[in-house]
Image (tube, rainbow, N blue to C red):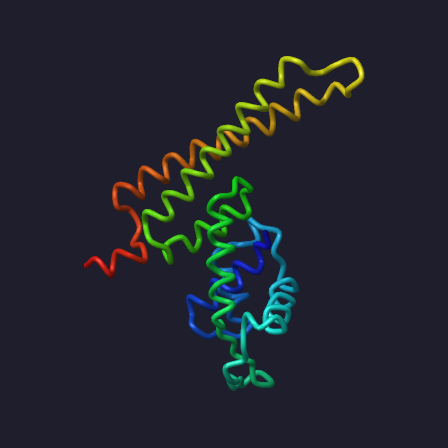
Length: 187
């Protein structure tokens, strides 16, 4: 899953139209560099690639006193569909970078849909953690490096922390925390 594509599509969806520097500034305000490997160059590359693929289109030019005008981008129908697909994948992932990007945009989805995706993520993280823990007593074998058990413990611990955090987020969502996409329709 491409976290940078999700972030770029999501910021443009959120703003309706944005130029590359605005996307970059928005992501900096989220401190994205602390929880992803997304770099400024990858943001601009994603803009070009998404435009080439028909996921974004140029919507005009914003004049700038500091230099040439900046191309404003907006989502196409295909871009909106990819955003939704990437968001669903991110919210059911237990890879922290993807999950973090999913959480950043989860409010764009109906509450129960997010809860269902997070429950699936929790189930998979717990299942994988349990499988790793079952393997741990049998390591290291004579033909394997001694650090194998430490790696299994590291991965198991990370998955346990993710599962615990996800469980708490699910409870908060069930209690009504966050304004979700379907809350406005119901009110």
